[in-house]
Image (cartoon, rainbow, N blue to C red):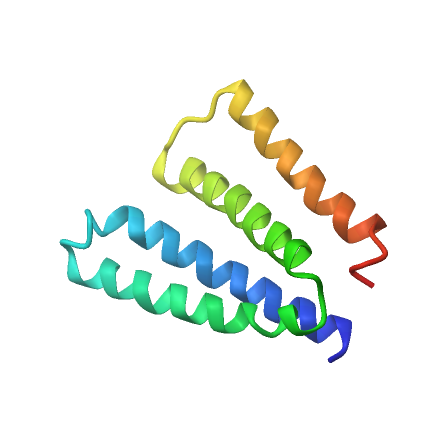
Length: 112
């Protein structure tokens, strides 16, 4: 599988996971039908898409990219759209997560 296709599946898995997690927060402990369905379907799609990069990349690297990007995107969307507050330590920590994802992708030989 070409690396660009691998990353396409990985980015799509991140997007599905972000949508699922944001819906989970709105499901009110699975008591609201539509957010609950989006959560369940979104995670199913995310794990299905995640299985493709796992064929050609180490599991630890795939999971680090998937979870790291997911964490940062969920925090950013929650801050921008839902008005959730982020203090300086939270921003610093999220920046370190993003830096870690970039280091793995740009400098690690196991990704290429």
